[in-house]
Length: 262
Image: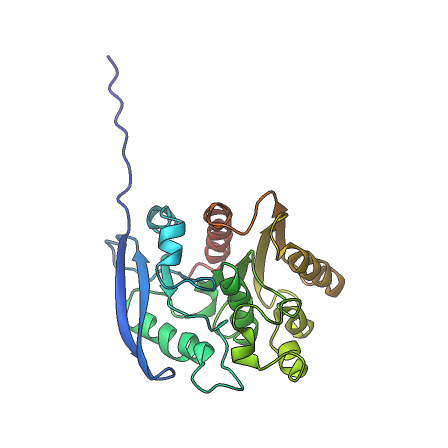
């Protein structure tokens, strides 16, 4: 009789960490998912941003396969608590400094305390819904920090929703602050992008309320001749879609990291 040995790789570790953010002047939590990495080599990192109403637990709960994905793809996944900030440094509310939190506090902390490759060619960011806008927003504004960026069902243009999701808390009332809203939405920010300055990937379900703005962003990038990966497929604004989509995006990030291997 032929004996068949089936081996399963060990899952990555999942930890919740709390540290002090100088930008926010408070303790903030993040979840970090790390592969076993027995050789202690430096590996790439992907930052996963949650949606409105979520926190650092949303991604691990929505996509429990992330623990195994981190192991299989050999990357560290970081899920910060971004409150309902839209990941802005607000020009109207000095307590909302979540771009500074991510860029100035969280990333340096992670690079100092974990085995991450501390350069843009081995660092990516993506997110769902509010976090999808945040992923593209932060990467476009910080192209020396991130080499790849994504969005899943992202609110890539929130101007059609001026009274939703506390956006006006960070940017002021739309009618009175239109220039601020225009300057801080991904749809307008891509005008300043140069082709191949970022590896871009985003997708949205055709039954999602953010589908029209995602399709419009895709069409604008085509017109601007900015290379990107865009997918639209059946699905709505829900956990089932996000959990499925993140697998594809992590594979694309892996391909990007491998192309920049040291």
